Length: 212
Image (cartoon, rainbow, N blue to C red; front, side):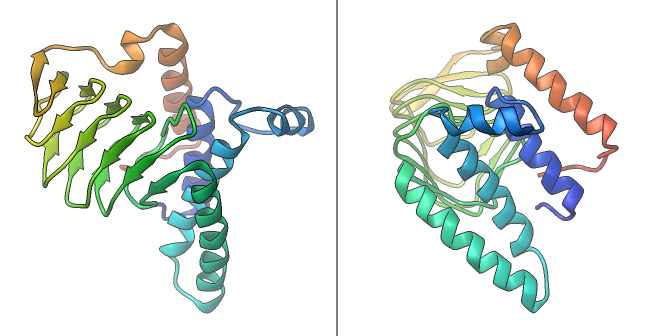
């Protein structure tokens, strides 16, 4: 849960970096994003974090702000085809494309997760580590514990616990590979550099406690 304005700023910046945008926006960047096909996804992620922050606050004003942001969040979600619980994800969430994505809640899902289209994390009660990669058409169902750096192949159905650093595939999914690299190591320097930027930003802003 996001507890402070600094953490809110960090979450928003981390999401931007991992989706290929600068942490901060200037006028030129705002104009570039206005014509970017990703602009609505960036707006969605920003609203998701703001709902998460203001929903944790007490006081009449914070509750009013939370309601107003939730209205915008729900409208943007409907436009993009998303139904995503705002409280579940750690920082650095990546959503590459518009399309149907369903995430119930509450769940505890770590940092640097990737959600492709036509995916579903059904209901709540799941604990999922950092570096989840949910390929198109895949689903996670049940009260599961999934480790760090788990990649779920396209059109797979995960109904069992998964260990760290594994590739899961099939319906129902089984472990196809162990000692499998994280998605950002597997997919090239572009993504590993983004992860390092986020980690460096965390140090620069002196955000040391566990964030999720």
